[in-house]
View 1 (cartoon, rainbow, N blue to C red):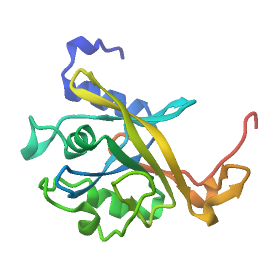
View 2 (cartoon, rainbow, N blue to C red; view 1 turned 45 degrees about the vertical axis):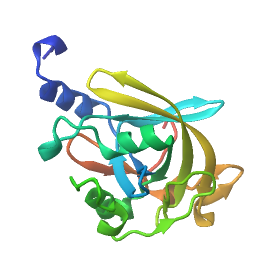
View 3 (cartoon, rainbow, N blue to C red; view 1 turned 90 degrees about the horizontal axis):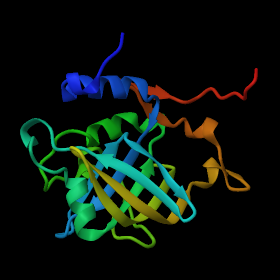
View 4 (cartoon, rainbow, N blue to C red; view 1 turned 180 degrees about the vertical axis):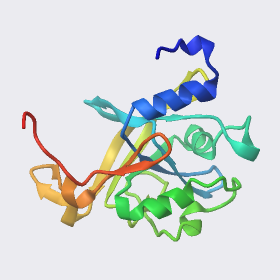
Length: 198
């Protein structure tokens, strides 16, 4: 089979992309509104954008469901406050992450809805997910409008890792982390690792 994206609808192209670019890491992004309200939401269009200086990027699409045609709270908050935290999602926190992805009203606190604890950050106002083992505090570098989505590029200004997940020499214990990945409509758990060739 072959497809020309210009001949397909947005939904069909999205399904091909999310079923092919896999597994995708999940950025569990915490932000605060201008009024001080907490927000927490996962995004799987996420990767490293630069190693020096360290920058991360997430792509945020438009609102869905009964919020179709609106901007997501994460985008609105980052644009207003220019700060956010990316929390890394281990597999055991998958249900809480999924709960925070629900279509809550703008004034809802997803930390509370998902039964999570909010921990103070060091250099930014948004709180961290205390239960998550890794947190990256970010300050906004730029927002780039790309078609229907917005690419958020943030500079990492502080990094946290729980001691039990740290191997020393700046290495993460991936076997213990069991990072959750996003597939088309499902998830993957990274628990088996190997080197090539084998």
